Length: 565
Image: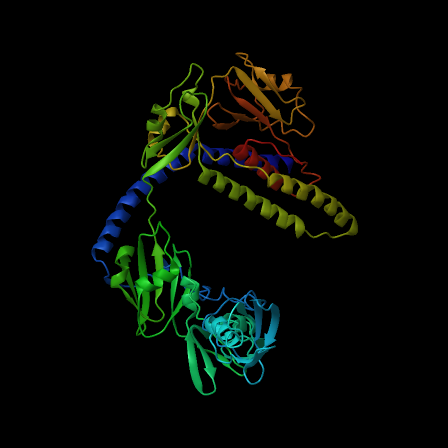
């Protein structure tokens, strides 16, 4: 069984290394394919835009990667309790003084007073030595003038006053229609509509309207509100409530969905049968990278698509149920490449999109120690892919460990100890960070690789050293000795540990290429090479030794680190 496992592991190593060695060719192929594809797409795109707003049959609905499903209603973010918690005490110049309001009055000069006066049932406030002053219905903006004129009827000279509406009367307001909690709510006459709506749980976003909110007094609608005006521009008409007023949220109007490269992907409400696309885009706010859009419409059981550049949105009209997908090709005009290692000059350079790696290397100024033949290219997307594969393997191992069955109590206890060991290994293995190196078997391969934004080109130094690490007694770096084998270097590192896999050694060349060399007795490394000795899980004691070995190899080859049990 042990030999069988070793054969499987060896097969995996060879396969994985073959994949690594072909990465450059694959990347090259993808780059060439992408270049061809980009050209074809560009021609198709230009043809589409030349038709401006032509309608086409939606024969392949799979092209619509973005749908309206799951999109929130624009405006549903309004009501989260923040308006209902506080009352509005700001200055409203058009507020009309009502019974129960409190007026703060300061008088100075021939007489000095500081009073807090309440408007009585007759609409008056009473000022000692002056008498009643009728303020019912007086605009807040005119309150100070009305009181000052009344005081001057008694005190002709040397008396000044300042009046301020301290608080408004308490009222009870009905909130009805399509809200989450219709009912009677307490507040002040100067509070906003948002205050009462929030207390009622907000507009029912699946049924209620954010555009049609009415204030009803008796049998008359005295005010209509559009909450999109508040969301877009901060406009909110100030309202003066009276006891028994009704805030009515009407049924939701028509909607249109917007997805893709926008700041506010959502379903947008509108009144009427049509609306201009440009107006909807004002709500959705396309990103700077947006270049075009498509409008999908289902009419009479048939689906059609309208495509146009985003600058021609003014010419497009929308109907209820339309789905807009804003897209952008995001073509890079320039790419940034960073340089590390042994060279002279700047550590980064900007190149036109479509530049080959061989052209990039020409701008480098090598030193006497630069090893250009061992240049290494690292790419984030490759590292992300390597990390995803490792995490997937770890997830599978973790799942198997957590769901393993035992036929006896003794076995269950053994499995529990084993599970703790393996889960500890999984936790440490998840921290490994792959390098994302694109393997080049020869420096000539640089002629076939196109750079992308964010690439890192490393130029190693010419080396006369050999590094040995992993499952050896004394990991170290040694002077290269011509004619010595891999096993000679391992012996000078103290030899293998008891946990070492001494039959499948790994040799990493100066340019990053990986080779599995069996026992390494007859393999002579070259200057700058790296020897890795991996651990070998005990197949007799561990149920998942094979899976663990596979993951150890993955991490060693992708991240250049050794993680054992």
